[in-house]
Image (cartoon, rainbow, N blue to C red):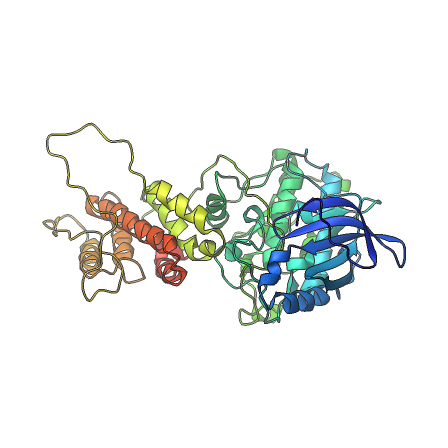
Amino acid sequence: MSADHVPNIPGYRVLSPLGRGGMASVYLAMQESVEREVALKIMAPQLSADPTFGERFLREARIAAKLHHRHVVSIFDVGVYNGFHYCTMEYLPGGPVMRRGDKPLALKPALRCIREISMALHYAQEKGFIHRDVKPDNILLREDGTCVLGDFGIARAADSGTIMTKTGSVVGTPHYMSPEQLRGRAIDGRADLYSLGVVFFQLITGKVPFEASDSLAVGIMHMTAPIPQLPSEFKILQPVLDRMLAKEPGDRYQTGGEIEAALAAIEKRLDAGDTDPSGNGESRTQPVRVARSSGYDTQGAVRTEPQIGRIDAMDEGGLRATPRPQARPRAASAPAPRRGIWWFLAALVLLAGLAYWQRPLVTAWVTEALKPAAAPTPTANPAPAVSTNPQPEPGSSGNPVASDPTPPTPDPTLPVSAVRELAEARSAEAAGRLAGADGALAAFVAAQQIDPDNPEARSAIDRIGKALAAQARTLIVANDLTAAADLQQQLAAVPALAS
């Protein structure tokens, strides 16, 4: 849709453009029948290439139009004209609550905004809706300063069987997506509460909690990195933020109403001059898992396939992720496995979900990760190179065999359990079983947890990780996303990557 060609939707007179994205353009328009200013959103015409798009668009937009709440943008009309699908909604001249690069909000307005959007999400949860793209751009201001949650156009009813997909589209923005959403797992309203936690952090500090050089790295940080600490003047809010940004949905607040109540209590304490973070009772040493009686059931959750929504450019940054602790028990003094290889493997766990909407980026990232390091000074007897793209042996499970190692002479000082894990690892690697709970990678990791300085385990983890990364790259380049998903499932079964 070119800037100089605006479809003439009957009953509406376009006044000026408001925004443009890869999937839709939004205009300020006059609804002539009632002389009311509205935001007119017109979907890109190429979406109509999907023969079922029109039916799904109209059905889901009509469902979203049933949401009536003070802090939810109202949808007035939805339809299709000359192949252009459109909807009109409440026009809010105040614009978004924060744009990238804006200064942080004062504490009181930030608290009020999060409380108001919490109430909007609580209402949506009660109606069975998941927003999927909670971020500052979608939180708009009324003239009186109250906040309103908009762009429910990519929302989906929790019991809806429809999936509005488009190749290359993104449901949500990686900087604001929950760990389970990034993994492609089933989600519910608690994913929106996580996103709201990211917004909360940004309103207070002026920056998102996790920044990295690309969207894949940001996703890994959401899955693995510790929750950032707020500046000292906001420490009273840290316990609330910790629950909003918990990695597991069961450790978060379960409803928007719970967040609103927690923040209301903090506001009262601030008014009374209390800024002690330990006084609100939110700090917990043990996570609280959601019970089935809470109303959340994985059978009723929905998956995170791409749907119709806004596409935003991935932001650039400069930090790297910090791997989370390993899942298997290990000695307290044991050092973590090499950081680089765990960065590889955490990325591989994301591949299946990310490949569906970001295949070129994932391919480029894995290719960059597999580039050899700067060549070391040659030695008299250099070690033989190990292929990073091996072929599976006949009769194997299909995973590549990274090498055909010769078992070293057993070290008599090794614990029996480490000897056993190493033997199992060699056997699995020889059979081509690299990933999975019973694969070579899992066994070598277990051996290294028992004997952190074991050179065989350390070398094998690097070797297998590179082989799996090479395999993932090949699958994505070939657009074999089914096989990539299988690889992701096998990697997710490795205890150190499963959490």
